[in-house]
Image 1: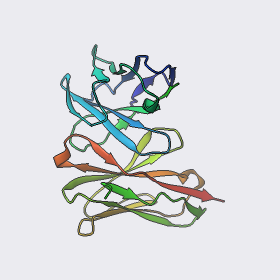
Image 2: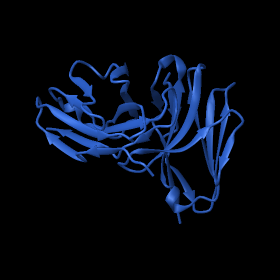
Image 3: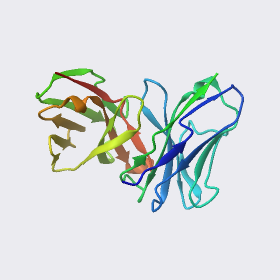
Length: 114
Length: 111
């Protein structure tokens, strides 16, 4: 079964540093997403991306966050200046269609900000 | 009121028993409904979509009650491998292209 691949699986970074989380969505999928889950809390939407631009973003996705699809396969999430509260599991997901269709999630990157 | 609300559990279930739990949603414009399963520290995985008429997939049955704004999941003949957190997920058309997750219901199946 096709997979969404995320790297690294775990990243430890110092507060104030920039991090880039990487994702390779399923190849024929057109919609890409980032979600995050703080330990013990619910999964929260960050951003959706379609046709090489952000289609939606949540209040969490402030100016410190950005996404990019630098080539035909990778989809990245950058956090410019990490804060302690950015520590969470970050899940990339992709779907064939948008608007409430089935999402396939990657295995996540656990980000720890110290 | 939370957009999607679930009893966090845990539901302790003897192996072979049946367990059922609900999820309520606050926005009547919610259009699509899903149950995802999440194992500890792993990614959510789609268990099943929930259709208006209710649907079954093996030992799992999902129901939708639009009038009372809840969905349910029933697991028959529970297996040890069913131990997980079950996430209720809702798509609200007016909210665009994102899914809204509940906090999850933890199920522990014991021998």
